[in-house]
Length: 125
Image 1: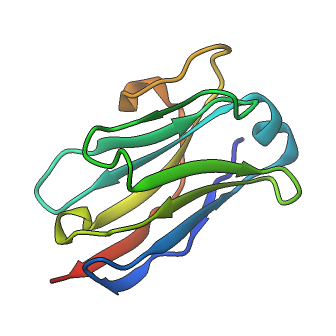
Image 2 (image 1 turned 60 degrees about the horizontal axis):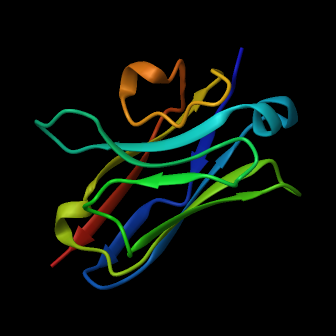
């Protein structure tokens, strides 16, 4: 059972920053691709960013490129999502996800088997 625990969400003004964290086990951290997705009310869950097991490959949605950065903290078995220049349209429930398929850097929800409970990000205008 893969456990993923998100934290770091909150309320921020437009233009501000937040950093989300996703803590997991050492085994998952060392072998799984990790992704961040988000879901706004009334909308489908969408891809935000992903990072492979080594941290050597990353992928971003066009809507967040240049503003968000995904990274890995090996000392804490944690995947981070640094979000800068936040916009009201970034408001959503943000989910951490894990994909055990070797070599894949997925951008679709069906490519991830394990999900956290989500952390709310609200950006006010």
